[in-house]
Image 1: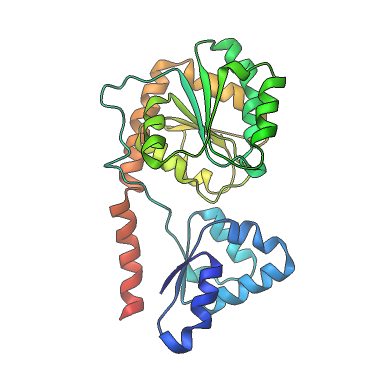
Image 2: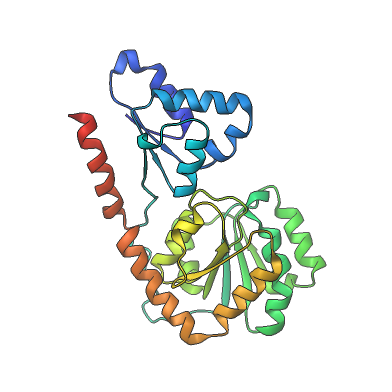
Length: 275
């Protein structure tokens, strides 16, 4: 049984006397980063993981956090999420809009307010650009108000939840994806951007550090609008650097995150468990 999240793994463990199958659990992020902050959550998580035969984590940071609560490190293998590189592809004509994109939830730990705070300086130096925020969440009203108070509301477009095909289209149109998260197990949106050849500016936290290398994007300190602003400007103001990042982004997605590659890692993990 392959469970995703520790809650699903707990259900698999409770039914083990009936199904009598080995249990593999894939940790997704908040089940470790959030739940284990409470002593009861940490105790429950630790006991569930002890009963699982194997564990996969999306990133090095997630493995380290799981080990820190008392899980044996040799039970944990890092296998990231993947992306369909046959669907998420660079635009055919390589024409892109002067567009900066964020795609994700409007919640505190995504750090969207820091991106908005970075934008006045970006718009001052790059007046041809605009920002599109795709997502939904409880911070939406506050973020709209912040854009107004910063005087950038006319340059910022808020879009509600979009289907995957639309997300792909925005990735292909954008010159840059920004993910200013304060916490992130991996970030599937990063993989989608890479596959579309879209360079990235993101926070230097958790699993983001596994994905973004200097040849595909720029990492900055979290919760730092000034650093975000400088990084965004540095990528967009240098067409030659942007082109190189775009090329290497696509290469990195195909070589490391294509679903066939990820599936192969899981098959190799399943085989000794199933005999």
